[in-house]
Image (cartoon, rainbow, N blue to C red; front, side, top):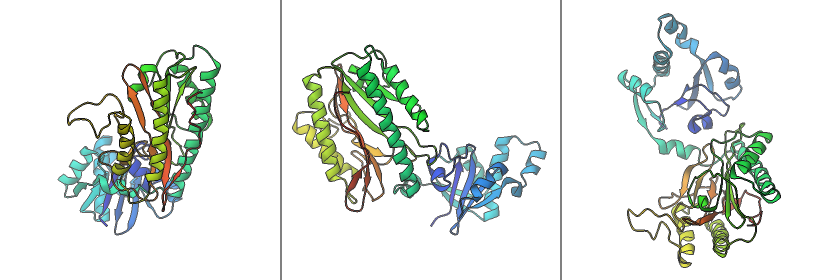
Length: 367
């Protein structure tokens, strides 16, 4: 195994959170050498990290932190020098890093004899198969998303003149009540907005138009996300939306049958594309090279979910081989600009022999 360096906090870095599974808001150096694991941290973090086991926790004072302060160095100069001293203490002369390793610190280490190579694929592979703590966190976040979806449906059907902003506030309220971290973007869009990717949605909702609710709260204990989407319609749904909804549900069912270890995300994506193509809808597999597809099934089938809401493996044209322990968001959709669209999204866990659908929520078009 190569020697490893990560410099990040555990709140924003999935690579660091996977190795050090507690919330540490300030960046620190994590290292692996000869099978041993080290964290070089400020004194206030030492007690919690020591409780983890299997991780040697080194306070910055052991790197002569106080001496650097006495020199009058600013914090950015100090953190570069502390990273170098940690490498020298461990005898790290070369290491691999995540893609997001800070350039300023990398330049300083390289200038002082530590060879670094970014190997993002290595760190992606490390966290593909979810451990029990991560799976528990995903399930908690998913139950919160389902509760929020209940609140969205209740508000939608019970109050005339409801806006996307009202529904988004309901979802965020439930996330908070359930102890979840509220994401930066909560999608509740309506009408033609629903055909515009990650449009968050705005304005009053009318009868007969699509409402897409895409919810992905984050569990604070594990740092893991969930992700789910449902499409609703007040009153009588147009035939076009009913057809979209029927085909998206069929696409979900086909995906679940196709997902298993050894199959690639690209193969599962193709299964759904072929379904939509049979019914006359364009997909990423039918468009011309360079064409910007704006209707039909214009996005991938989905993505991995865990310490990031979008992570490997992808379920698209470049999707890689699935492994047991992957958690996937499967989200087929059909859209037409000026009209709107439909998207249905479930989380599934890849098992040894197939997959398990983690989402437990109805697909009704009526709220």
